[in-house]
Image (cartoon, rainbow, N blue to C red):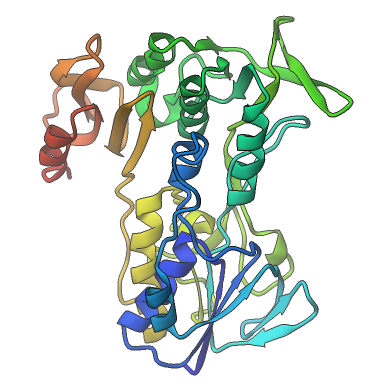
Length: 371
C-alpha cells in the first residue's frame, strides 16, 4: 500500500496512525477530521475541563505528531466513499487511497433545547453556560451524565439528574450495582429522579426554563444537558461500498467486506459488538491496522468491556459483563468502597464481570483472573 486514509482524527484515528507507523508502513498517511483541533483526550472534558482546571489535553505532543509524517486534513468532513479507494470530502476534494481506516466515532443523541458534551467545542459552550447558571438539569444518568452532574455540583450548582430507567447504568452494571452507584448523587447533594421520561424542555428566547417530565412534574434548570448516548457516525457512508448496521459492519478484526477498508472505535460494529470505550478504541486500532496491512484478517480483538468513570471524587471501574448473580467480595456499598463480582448463576464460580468503587488495587488483581 502506498496511501492510507484515516477518516477520523480523534483517539481511534490517532492510535490507528501510530499503529501503522509502528508496524512499518512508510507510505503516505492522510488523516481527515471534521474538527479543527488536533487530537485531544475526551474524558477530561466532563470533569477537569468543566471545572476550569485544565484546557484541552493533547493525545500526543508535537514531536510525536511530527514523527507520524502524516497529512492532517482538519476542519473538513468525509462526505462519502466513492469507491473502495476514493474518499469524497465536504470541501469538494477527494482523496485516493489504497487503504481506508474508518474512525468517525459517534454523534450524540440530542433533545431540543439541551446541551450535549462530545467535542471540545461542546465543552467550551457548556462551561460558558455553567458560568451564568445556578441550576443544572442532566438528562441521563449514564457515565457522561453522572460526570457532568458531579462537575456541576463541584461548581456549586443545584443539580437534578433525570433517568428513564429504574436505576442508573442498569444496562451496564445491572439493577443492584446501578442503584449503588446512583446513591453517589444523593450523597453529594444532587437530586436523582429515576423511572420517568422527559417530555420536553422549556425554552423561551433561547433561555432554558426547566424540564417537563412525562408524569407532569417539572424540573427547574437554567442549563439542561442531555447525556443519552450516541449513534455511530455513518451517515456519510450511505450508498457506499461498506455495509452499515448499528455502525460499520466488520469482523472481529475490524475488517469490512472490502479487505482494504477497516473500522475502529465507536463506529465499528465488530462481529455484532459495538464498544464505546476508550480502551477498546486503542486496542482495536492495533488489530485492525495489522489486518489492513496484511490484506486479510490475521488477528482479532476481543472486547473486554473495560470502562471507568470518576464521579463525585469516586472512581468506578467495570469490566466484563453484568449478570443477576452479583456478590460483594470486599468492602461495603454503604461505605462507597467495594468490589463486586458477577457470575452466570448461583452454582458457578466462574467470574464473568467485576465492578469496583474506590478500590482500584483489588479490582486490578481480580481482573487478571477474569475469563
